[in-house]
Length: 348
Image: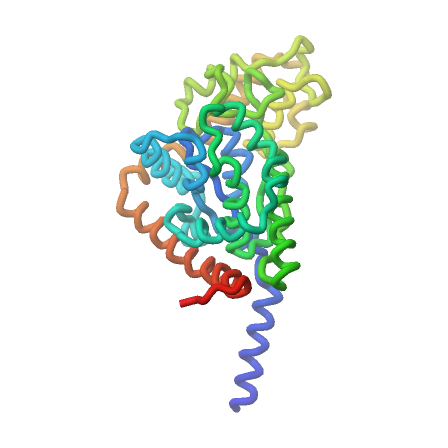
């Protein structure tokens, strides 16, 4: 009987390994004011991926301090972002969702990986060059070495895939290079992650400068939609969106404004570009911009309602991020301990 029972256990373990979902890790900075671009490009996909993959999510608050922060505002941004992500559909029962600074393994592995990352590699990072230009009075060491922290974030969880926008692929490539270098020296320590790039809604552009990515730092307030904007504000911003003189709703080269609006409309309605073109055949841009605005309002309405409820329940939020951090620490410490042992540290 014991033989047959043991065989069943072994078969079950093998079956679980075969059927194991791929693990996804993703983190977003809680810098305040979640935009429509953040939601459609990253967060909406976070929600969808929970059913298909084993997901681990984080608010990357350690990354925010490469730029000076006002303490009270930073704390408020973290709590707002946490509640808003839950309101959007991130389920802490399905996916550990934690605040990065609550899990000490991130900072510890980041230091180790700093010692396996080349100075020239960090100097080539496009985002370092961009942020250095914007914050010339505060080009600090953290701004230079934060890709090592980003690599630690990913590699700690042995992630199979990382959702990235086209502008973030450089960071993932560096993460892969660091992992391969470390593995080449010490053996198979880190899994080499692959990029997961969503096909739709991956890059939402400014409504006023449609050749630039939608950003909360846009100097034109009408260029950016925030997830917590009121319906009236959302409709007004879409009505003012930059288009062209063609007056025909079709996706084509040179029609950056309309292409952006079609991409947004497609993301919130699920309609293809061909379906959108047929729907607005013979109609002007005014009708189309209003339809896009109304569709976005309806997409965000339940999120805004959920956010109000969650924001009022501080105890529930605290319980969720504490539980997420506890599980994240348990998973990540195995990787950190393995890396430290390989290097030669004496573990406790």
